[in-house]
Amino acid sequence: MPGFRRMKSGISFVICDPIAMSCWVHGMSTLEIEVGDLRARSVEFTSSELVVTLRDGRRIATPLDWYPRPAAALPKQRANYEIMPMGIRWPDLDEDLSVTGMLGGRQAK
Image (tube, rainbow, N blue to C red; front, top):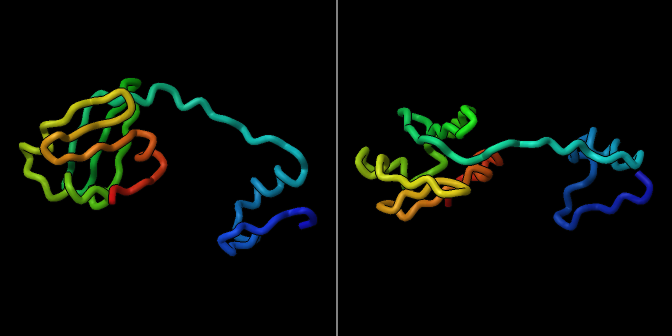
């Protein structure tokens, strides 16, 4: 595509999202979506997932394997969490997870 600069990582524009590329080429803007209230209301664990219920009732379920500390924790340690303005903190585990990180598919390291 004329005028398109390749990314420094070496990934060509062929791999990029075709819709985003089409919008960029034709000078269109992308739609911003209002995500609403991302504050957590509660946290629970299944055998394979971390499930966070937001204040507006939506539920985010992510693989428990993404979070090694909570995955290896005792039930008592998992139950001791604090809801923070932007996420959840487990003081016994020294683990902080943001709701936006969960939505973005970011795994803990």
